[in-house]
Image (cartoon, rainbow, N blue to C red; front, top):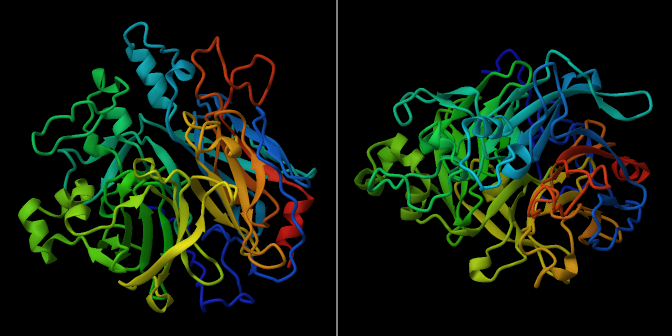
Length: 536
């Protein structure tokens, strides 16, 4: 898989607190596409106040243009999917960073928009197939034009869709629920990029599509949400909830069983000096866990050991079947452990966390940041960002220290942190994910719409949380990804108008305005302010 693409190596983030460190990654390896230069004299940034407008509002010095919206034709047969999330830009040539492939996740569907299903009549097979097609991912060839704007290259041979109907094999020695391949990928939330330039797209809320299994009875759990897809396509729930690797140049894909099955939010890779891989991933559900996979061979995502974090003890606990008497008593084999990952993690003492979502590695000091969105069951409405320091700054270490890096709240100006990215100066950017059903209500009311936030590393505003963008009504901003020169931030505007009672009663009309239907879209954010923040 993907070996046709020349392997690249990741940044090696050396030295705690080395703020003057300058390191040069390759174009395909990570989000930090050119030199990362933290510095003490960033320009003063004036953010925006929370907004309740049905618009994508940006801080002064920033502007945006739309790259692609739901339903746009990407080639003669395919259209851009629904509810775009994670984005990643892969240059086609190291010498030309302004021409490449943009991967975009499509997480889930809103039937009233996608298939016209409103519950008044039984869902038809045609409606199910429309919904299946609308999830997965899109691959778009994009280029920066002379005017500085990015555009999709229409009908480029590389433009394609991976959907809920695409056959995808399992990268594993044993069948999963009796099959060697799954039909489709779905629930695609956040993701990552491998050192060799392929995409890792993560299947998060998989149970919303074909339900979930009660492994004690073998039956689907009562009350598990089902879009009625299984009425016509009764696929096993165990075929979903995996990290999926996609080669954006060919569309070739595979599901990586060794990384376990859960509501994966992301898959963030660190390549070690010896070529082995470390993959961090979180289970985005309340009271679920944080995981780390360490490969036993260079470049492998199938051979190695998966660990779960015990944050109370500061330990990574092995989920390897053959080394655990507890696992051997409760599970049939390693495959069973990985399929029932949540149960295995719980019995081994994995720490329940407040919805671990995106994970990023600080490009300057190597710390691992984990967005803990919230846990309303425990009345933690605002969430936090956790900092995890691996022992000796070694990402293969089995011990660590953790603490709160940023706490959400009215005082800090944000709630429910979600997706994160570091810019070329090592500053942190992150988005928020306040639930549409609670937005504009207490305790979130003062924060209004979801937003995009900026945290300077140095200078007089160091450590402050500055709001840089406000989303349209009902929407969240997701998937921030910087272009190689840092002068463009690709960003998804997901589910505007998701609380619309019907297509006749819309709560949002973004981006076209008037009485138009809301369109999930990917935008390119640019401007003098963004350029100033990236300068060395």
